[in-house]
Length: 452
Image (cartoon, rainbow, N blue to C red; front, side):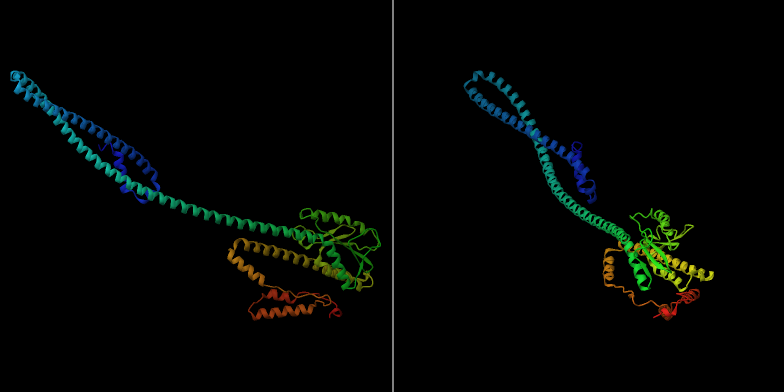
């Protein structure tokens, strides 16, 4: 019997000893075992049904035997009555009685055996009923546990779906923030390119406006229409010579071909040199933001003339240097040393201007890199706080006025004041740097009569 219901017994044992983690991760095995136990339980119910049918059949047999016994008893009474009336047939009756007695004895034995069998079957039925009741109870308990497991599984699935939804929401938010950051960076780059293009497009007008302003400020003749062939962008007249300033800027945001374009223009300005009273030095004025990235050569010796690449910032000191020539009645009166000094001064102006532009570009790129890293690396809360402080800040550099000249003695006074403040705050410059700062040739040899 135990071998027949091995799966059912094993299932109940597993249910009694199962742990929480086995319920979570071994539920599939337990479920398969429950199916096998259920099949054995159905087999057990079938056996009970068969035993019930056998019991009913035995009961019918007993009823038939009882009826037979009643009939036999009635026959016995008839025989006893007949024996009184039929004494002559006594022997025959005795023989019949003997046969009937044997038959009764045989039937009594059959009845006794049937009764014993019925008793055994009753015991088995009672045993099966007890097992059935226990099985039904166990099945009820299993159903309750299964309901609890299903509720736990549903809760776990609900929690999992909520966690997944929250995770997806966070991921979408992060992706959206990253997309907005990329779009902002792209927008900044596009705005920067647009600004560069606008600057380059307005470069020619800006150069013309600047040169006119310098000429007006320093009483230099600006020639609107030249008396020779060709139409340079800007021409000024110094010491009866026409000095040509041509504005050149990139046509597109691709600066790779700009140096080639400049070299081509150094050949194209040859047409001005052929004209009478045109100075042999031609100046090509380019935007400041193209110097550090593309332009590597700033002067071209073309045998018959020279071409210089300059920026907008160097125009005023350059024109003032050229204007110094008017201090001499004839150029031939200049000594070689004076000419050398003039060339050296122009060279220093050009070098200082280019170096300053180069440094400004270097720090501009570094500052842009730092700003980009702030947007990417700083946490959002800190970045928002930084933006609030940035909006509250305001930088006001000294304002320049047209009628007021920037004096060298004012610059020296400001430098000495800064040095005194640095010493007071224990910010000590190296001796070599202090010496260089004190001996800077700021407009060395300028005419004191021009000071205000």
